[in-house]
Image (cartoon, one colour):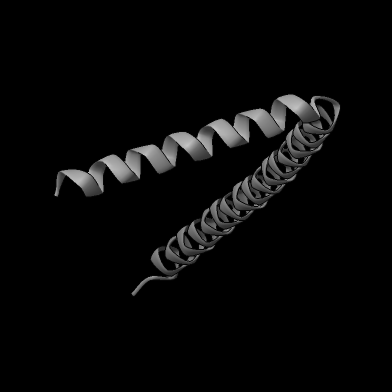
Length: 89
């Protein structure tokens, strides 16, 4: 084999290795960015759920009579529905 062909082959292999290295780095950077985005979204979702729970708790405490009345009405309705379903059998 002539030295010219060997040199060209070596250059081509080196260039291919550099391209593969750059592609691997690009993929790693994309994965790192994706993990960062998912982490931020999960934190924001957790914060939103906590805020919703706090707001609901405060609303229930401010309207205590309405909360108790609604809970009682829901219990009576559920009991009546269960009783009606058992009576039909």
